[in-house]
Image 1 (cartoon, one colour):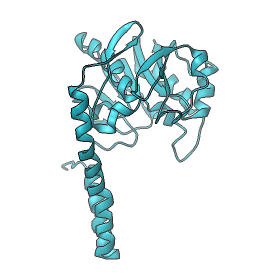
Image 2 (cartoon, helix red, strand yellow; image 1 turned 135 degrees about the vertical axis):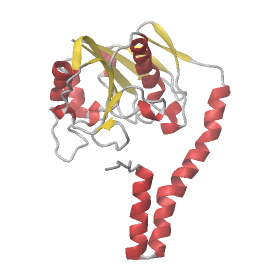
Image 3 (cartoon, rainbow, N blue to C red; image 1 turned 60 degrees about the horizontal axis):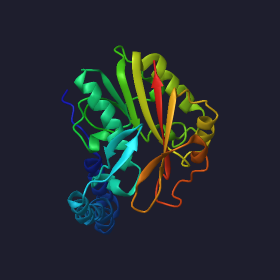
Image 4 (tube, one colour; image 1 turned 120 degrees about the vertical axis):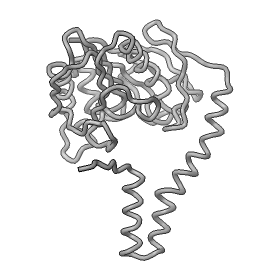
Length: 255
C-alpha cells in the first residue's frame, strides 16, 4: 500500500469541497476565504517586515554567557514573540550534537518550520511524513537519544488536551529521562511562563525534575531579552505587558 501524506491544506480543501456539496457554493466560498485567502494575505503582509529585519543590523542576546543573534522568520512572525530566542538557543545544542554525530529527538514539531529536519520528531498531533505520532508517555524507543530538545510544547501536555491532567508533564519528563535519554545525554526544554499556571506551580516547586533552569525575560517592545533570576520570573504574565510569553525558562535535564 502506498502511503500518501495528508497535509493540513489538503485536509482543509477536502472539508471545503464537502461543504460545497452539502451546504452549497455560498458556504464553500466562505470556507475558501477563511482557509486559503486570509492566511495567504497574512503571509504576504509579513514579507515586508521580514525583509526589513534582514536588512537591519544584527542584534544579539546572551544565554549562559554566550552571545546569540536574534532569530527572525516569517513563520509565526518570530520577531514578535519568544521564538526569537528559543530557536537560536535550541539550534546551538543541535549543531553541537551534529558535529559529534549524536542521536537527536525533537518533541513537538517546531523547528521543521525553520530548518530541514535531519533528526527524529515526536508529535502527537502534527501529521507530516516521518513525524512519530505518539503520546509522550507511550514513547519508549529502542535506541535512546543523546540530545532531546523541545520548544514551547510541554506546557500543553495535560493542559491543552481533551482529558485534563495537570501533573502529566511530570510523568512526561520522567519518561524522557528514564526511557528516551541515553546515559550521559542531555535534554533542553523551553517553556513559556504564565500560560499554564498549574505548570508554573510545579516548576517553582521543583517538581519538574530539571537539573538546571535558566530564566529569560522580555524587556521592551523591540523584543529584546535578558537573563533573570528565578525570583524575578515568578511573577511573569502571559500576553502582559507584551504579546505571548514575557518570560521563559530553559529547563536542562541530564542522564
